Image (tube, rainbow over all chains, first blue to last red; front, side, top):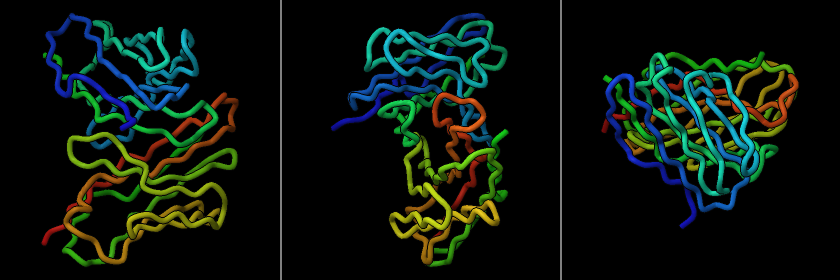
Length: 113
Length: 116
């Protein structure tokens, strides 16, 4: 079955540590996205990527970094510079940036204490 | 800029009740409109979509009509089930404003709980 996998489902880190969230897709999609979800709020875009080795900042990129070395993978690093890292993180993909239909992974809940 | 406003939740209904979740939007271009559903502990799934004015999106008994004159895209279902309990997000995608892609703008989500 084609889809998007995110791991782990729950992640706990101490303040001051960087942490990397995994996102893999086997849909052969060119475009990939990272969103952050906080309680009572909609999703906010962190980063997006159109093709391998290319990515752009979204609305709330500060304190985050990404890489796109392979078409199927788009890992997100939450750095110690992110002031409020505890959140639910969702990865998504679409056939390309012109396609408005995005497919979402199951999410990773990150808790930083 | 673009924005999406959903009715405040949570919404609590009995099984077989009629559901309406209001959604209104502001957009600078000609957006496509979506409803996504998020079941507990999961990611979002596309529920339905409409790409132009007067289009009606439908799926799994849910419907929404793209009303340009009232800038609305309200979600309705005639008879809800316990399994419909989830968070529902209204969203729009718009290429206007100099974006290079169909950026999705989400509402804040509405929690729906259906009791037997």
